[in-house]
Image 1 (cartoon, rainbow, N blue to C red):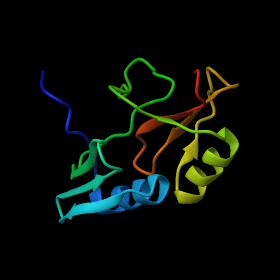
Image 2 (cartoon, rainbow, N blue to C red):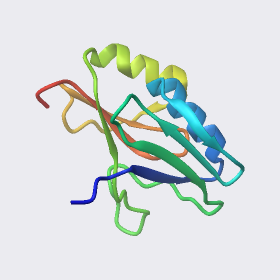
Image 3 (cartoon, rainbow, N blue to C red):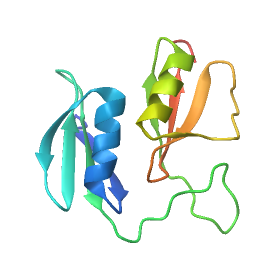
Length: 123
């Protein structure tokens, strides 16, 4: 079996998006350049990297015919959904208007428009 070493998100400004996730997650920047930035989390976690894509188009949420579709999203388990949402917004995220599971999950978008979810244990 081959372990997953990380996930890479395209962005028009990889440094700015990496800084957002650094503030959100508290992870350390381990590689930084004009075209590529990587964060590493606690021991044993995967890397989260960002590469420059000047033609990046944020996906539509919820999906719409003829629009850029979301092909993946990141999930972050949190203990306090309201506090995590507030922290994400303060870091630069947007709470999406359509929330399919309002009680234990919050759908958000990062500053480049990538969708991610905050969720409580058990959801």
